Amino acid sequence: MKKFMELWTFEWNRAKRFYGFLLAFVTALQVYAVFQEYHLWKDGYENYRQQGYAALPEQYLQDYGHLTLEAVTNNSFFVFSILTAIFVLLFYAVFIWYQDWSGKNRFSFRLLSLPGNRFAVYAAKFATIWLLITGLQVWQIGLLYLEELVFSGLIPADIYREIPLQIAATNTSPLGLALPSLFSNYLLYYTIGYTALTLGYTFILMHLSGRWKGVFLAATLAIVLFAAMLLFLRTGITTRLYAEEKYWMTIAVSLVLFLSGTWANYRLLEKRISV
Image (cartoon, rainbow, N blue to C red):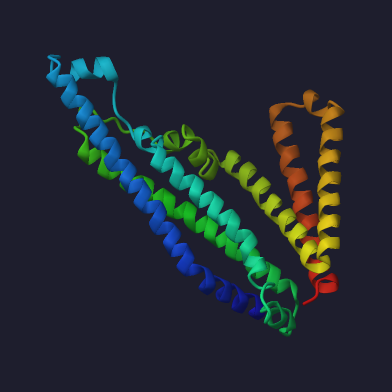
């Protein structure tokens, strides 16, 4: 446990500058989205008045309806910030391994030569990615509350309508994927997501342990898993299941793959991978 905590702290210290920049970038884009939507509404409202229409809010609402936080979460800059954060974290999830195995004086030799279980190296990297994802989720929830506070303060009270933040998140695909409004969806999405991350690390470790031979084996394993999934779907079993049964079957299969991938990663680090 001591080795794991030391390695986890080390990985976090390496990631915190990049992570701070990512949070600042996401925040800047979303703040811009708030003020852009405000100016778009303000310009449209001024044009509405200049065209000779009644300036009464009731008449305006009949024509255009209330303004909500969905205007911000559907803004292209807001959506781009979410997609950027997702792709950057995916990139770092791969980079976190290859940064230690590249170059002449590979840092991987020092990592794997440390006393104790080698699996602590894997656990520390996986926990770091988990921390980055969870931290970004918490940051995004805080941003949504602040954005609603600012946006509702800019828009007149009789024009703006408050909605639950869950609705604002649900109606935007990238945000709804990153922050599901229902716990059942959160459990499903992130069980599948962390399972995919674990299997991805299996392929990476196969490559690091066998180079081109490892790439071939990883590609073969991916094809076998994909073919097995297609054969299972062709059996028609899923068509005879209720929605809740499909949900729990997906969770169960994901957990089996997650545990299998974790065991394979343990074996690769302990028995196969070299520096």
